[in-house]
Image 1 (tube, one colour):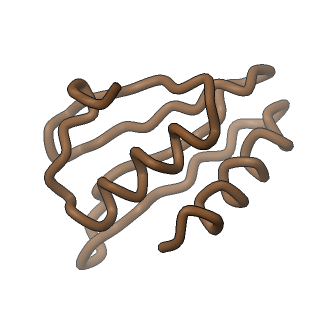
Image 2: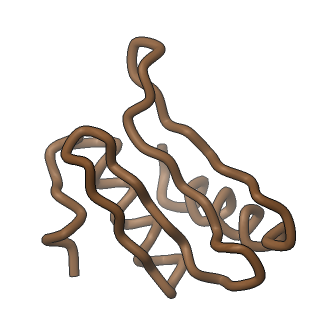
Image 3: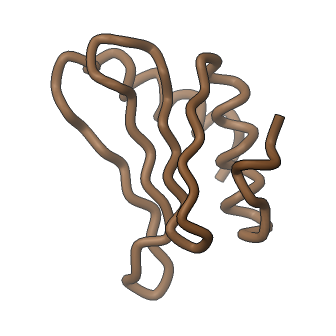
Amino acid sequence: MSKESLIKMLETLCQYNDVEITHTFSSNEQPVMTVRCLKLTRTIEITNFKNNTVKLFDNIEESAEALQLLINENTIDLTSYS
């Protein structure tokens, strides 16, 4: 998934931050991670089920970069992303 596509998805999530919308990424029909914009903010929350970590981002571009790494490599630990 391209960074531009991820940014567009994240912007859309934040556009509707007055309702609870969660985007789930799956592999083999099993959830791998979720992404949501916290209600009434522009804070992005990424939850990685593989290592049970949650990371908050205040920047959409940084969120997209972290997601792209998780999708493409599926090895990054969100707690180590800066």
